[in-house]
Amino acid sequence: MLNKLTGRKKMSSPEAAEELQHEKIPSHIAIIMDGNGRWAKQRGLPRIAGHREGMNVIRNIVKACNNIGVDTLTLYAFSTENWKRPKQEVDFLMRLPERFLSVELPKLIEENVRVRITGELEKLPDYTKKAVNKAVDSTKHNSGLILNFALNYGSRSELMDAFKDIYEDVDKGLIKKEDITETTVTDYLMTSGLKEPDLLIRTSGEMRLSNFMLWQLAYAEFWFTDVLWPDFTQDNFHEAVKAYQKRQRRYGGV
Ligand code: FPP
Image (cartoon, rainbow, N blue to C red; front, side, top):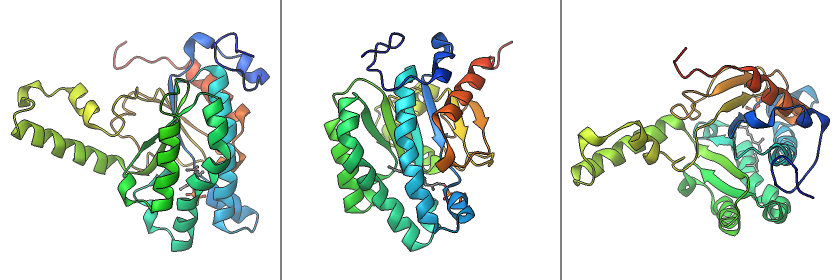
């Protein structure tokens, strides 16, 4: 069955979603999925149990995005700073894409979702690369929701690389210094081709960006919740979108 508002295949129809204004759906939503460790600690479980539970939430949020007609969902799954965590935790996090995609990839293909990765893939273990490359490749012709995993991503290093690449291209005569615009910088980032996020959600009560999409979030609306990521529901998601719809976006104007 098709969703009458989005024309996309209908995944679920929670009442809260029906209350949203369908002409004001954020096109790109980015989420900092925080609080997995605390969720586990509260239950006397190892931190990795929180990450496992957090992985399961992704499924519901993808469905919710599809249902209301979001174009792109970016999930901050692993930052360039997360390597500082204990080896056992890093190893577990590196296995998550494989675990997630072994179950979810057929469903993502069926739901016309296109998987994309933003981050330094080369530095990931082979099994992680293999899993994500397979997902990217087998969904590359899909035209529905873009599910963009920020994996081994850090915004400052992304910006530095962009500046170096621009410098090199100026040096080679491919572009002129005076022709560099904001669009040029945007095009040299790892997120090139994606719209910039309209809404940033961060769970677990923390209110910071943690080196996430510093350039791309310049005009995004921020929404924070105390809910820990493993407890984050479709209702919480709809609450965030509802809050977004009440905001007045002025982009520096009046
Ligand atoms: C932050 O919580 C969470 C992460 C660093 C990892 C997030 C990853 C997932 C939810 C799963 C990713 C799944 C795939 C398929 C890539 P935290 O551990 O910092 O929580 P804390 O602040 O309570 O310690």
